[in-house]
Length: 146
Image (cartoon, rainbow, N blue to C red):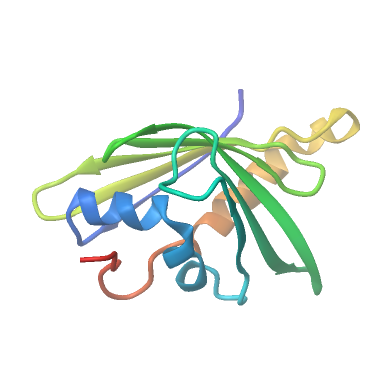
């Protein structure tokens, strides 16, 4: 199966990086350079399997909503999620690998376009990899509550 895959090394301990990615209330405004953001998290409380995030983003000049559903969370190791992005239903994961003084985050996903668009899978996966390079905490350290 073709998939999207990309990695980035972040100069922070794995606990800080994991917290940053698991808590989009804090991270979404910093991760989306186009000004999108989290508009709903359900249910309230700490994010975990079953949590749904709804984001509103500008895509191709129009405001779109995307949904992300957490399917598995292994603290400081992995976050698995499914999403609803237009007609696509990607299945994705973020894995967190502690290094000496930093953390390697690896994104993997399959774009899963619907029936008639399946022939576009390689193109969509490539597009997803390119987009993923913009999804970084930015310059400096991710900050969570202390």
